[in-house]
Image 1 (cartoon, rainbow, N blue to C red):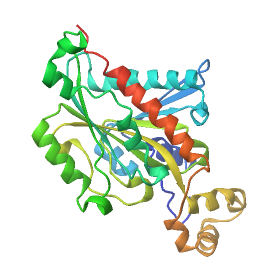
Image 2: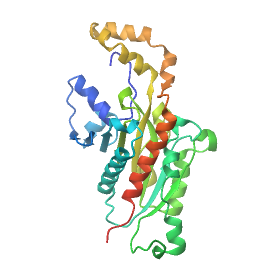
Image 3: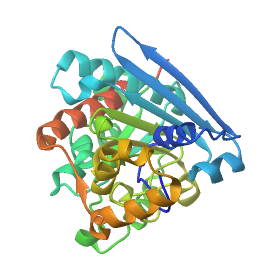
Image 4: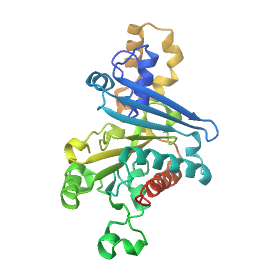
Length: 304
């Protein structure tokens, strides 16, 4: 990164990588990595534990779990089943699902725009149980304990004229869930992470953040219930691609020369452009199914 040029990313992992590249140690940030060679899955947990860490990272204090799986971009049911299991495992830890809970899943995004339709598709594939339990009781499922799941696809402001947070606040006030899980498409700084990475965080989520259109956040502070954010980077800033393609050339320049070169080469209109892989429509279908299956597995039943 040079001068005032800022690379947009929603992934906490990529922010920590930037500090590593610049040899900057961030106090109040803990990083733990785990690589499963057999499954080819790398999991990185970033914990922001202090106000200093939050200011430096530009993110709220909390836990950010990043699952990197190259096979996510390939339609392999067995591999995606492994990822669903990983999602369920992390959710059980974050939500303490040994206790019966009421869970509202929010599918953020615009279903009419493929790269932004991850959230709506996840909700469409969910096993929704709240209405059945309210109507027929747990006996209809043959269980003594079970999580009550509900889902909503609130759309975007251009469709509804309302802030997503306003819609969700109203639903939360009426249905009183124990936890909200918000699903959204994100932006990455690296093309290799597009559609191959899942971020799970207990800090909530900002609708529209993937394309720099930040709305009021869905957070515990705003909703007064615990909020989990789950996202997959489906787009990358076009200016980032230009920056990365010139990385080797930039290394030969000093900081002032880098700044001048980037300002000349990266046109302002590039900062409003986003790029997504050409097969994103097919990829979103099985990515959304993978995430919904992870949620279904996690919520299958409350332990005795």
